[in-house]
Image (cartoon, rainbow, N blue to C red; front, side, top):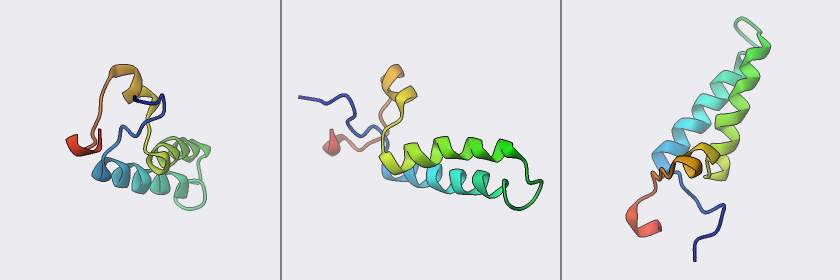
Length: 68
């Protein structure tokens, strides 16, 4: 039985989200020092959790078939 928060992100997807999140968060401290960099928290947290609420809503899974 699938749980509501089952992993729906594959390894590459998660890695890209984590790196993108860290880069965007870095904008808060270096570069333009804009608070818009806090948007990076979203991909960072979804990448660390391995679950994306938008993917769940749209029925998208980037996990390998064997992980389902």
